[in-house]
Image (cartoon, rainbow, N blue to C red):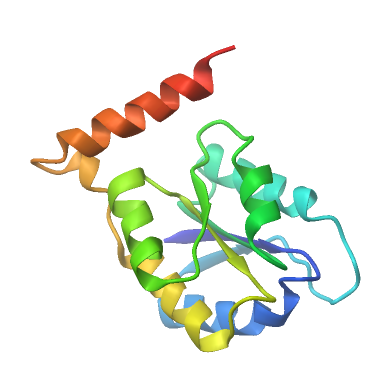
Length: 152
């Protein structure tokens, strides 16, 4: 699985833990940085990761800022990106299964290394149920989200 990874300075503290988790899962990482705690603007990283997912260069994305909220808001401006901030295992898994989430957003100032690793594993091991037998309700709901996205 190809994963686009991006973070600002607030997300930088989780960088090594995330790279370790992705390596353990045998993922190919497209690393957009940042690679230092120097202050940068999170929308720049959300755009890079979001476009990689939108264009099919990455299967899924992971974004980290201080709270996870800013990168989530920015990434969701890109059509085809379904980004959500998750700080518990259920949401990280269920967001993929029910809502077709393709970008996991985390708060580097909210969670620690071990929880971040767990959330990445839940996110990447989950499968969207809308494509499965009996998944019509999920596909219908995601279809409505796509319609909202396409309204002018």
